[in-house]
Length: 556
Image 1 (tube, rainbow, N blue to C red):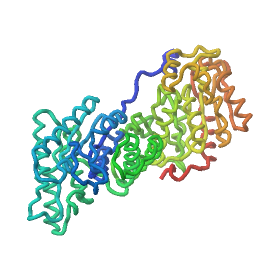
Image 2 (tube, rainbow, N blue to C red):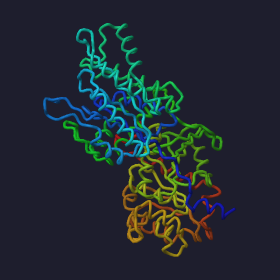
Image 3 (cartoon, rainbow, N blue to C red):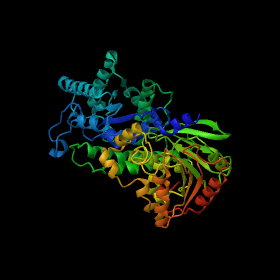
């Protein structure tokens, strides 16, 4: 039994969390505007299947799929951009799993019906479908919206007839297996009803760009036919302000960053942030959005169950499984303990803290060994749970075994977000475990996996100076208290190469660290039969933690 437990705790799990869907909106200025895509995104995020999808609006004003451009476009400043000039870059960089494409408004270049222009539009969509499917993604086409100026010449709108032709051709392709959302009939009906209710209603003053109502009509028409194609239970449920405004802010941030990264050629588009910077800013916005939806009474996709008599909530964040266990009566300030590995193993301290009003949380970052990618997943999890469940901005990190890498590394990265560290037989230097470069046996398979996830050669790993034993100064400066529970005879994670080095160096830096020794103890069992010392430490550490988190990252 002991060998089985050791295997579970130290050998790599072969199970990885499923990665989230990656959805790209492609289109012209009506898509770029962002209002109808944000509504559709909000409805997708209300479903378990797409709650955590990576959704980006790649719309570009003036764009066509036909490659056509009218003489003197933009007063002669530049011809209309064509999607195919940038499509390969978008597909290669973003690697979508699903593309939603809405073109046609600009492809007839605002001239009467013409067979050659229709064929250019058709050929452009054929090329688009081929490129997306070659990349391995699914594409769903959306027929063009209405061209409906406030007043049509002689009561006839010839250009909308052009768009009717585009739409009819797209719908006809369903017979050959194309997936097409035809929004035009529902749009026409919605506009007619709006005008019947209010004769002064205008769908699009310039004939092209709809107002708020028009964008909602588009989103509703998309949802009506998209949901069956995606196998989603209907109807689509759209967010309202203020949550929707947060989602639009996030969408705009990512849109400009991705358009800049994929090097579009259309003049007049604001430059976006570097993609890593945009993603860093986008993560808390998604958490803010979800919190706003909860405050509005919306259901966020969460599986509810029971854990030792307490309510357990399971969900995903950025494609990783996460959970929060709620106490029956939260303590003041909503303190929480964050298990970084092996949730449910030797849980006596966690259970006791639930009884004292703590939340217990966990996100699955297995097989990532405290690497930067793991810390990014932890950042997104932290942002979501502090906002959605209004947890304290300074949790107690709980690192069992290799979980010590995650706990120490995240605390060093964000010392202003940590109340304390409780570590148990912790790995504090990956050269010791899994590297096996000292007196312990290490784990060769985990060592190779670690090198891969860090992107290191063996030489680079051995020279790395940001493992916990080397990177304690940020914790000491922030006065983060540390409690460690260890077996003095641990042969798997030798204390002389791990926690003993941390203790010596942390004390030299003026840090507060206490070690509870288990004489003769091995790597297992973790924790203490009576967890009272751990509980007392947790209560003191979180009670004295003073929030210094910037306003943009505080729980709302």
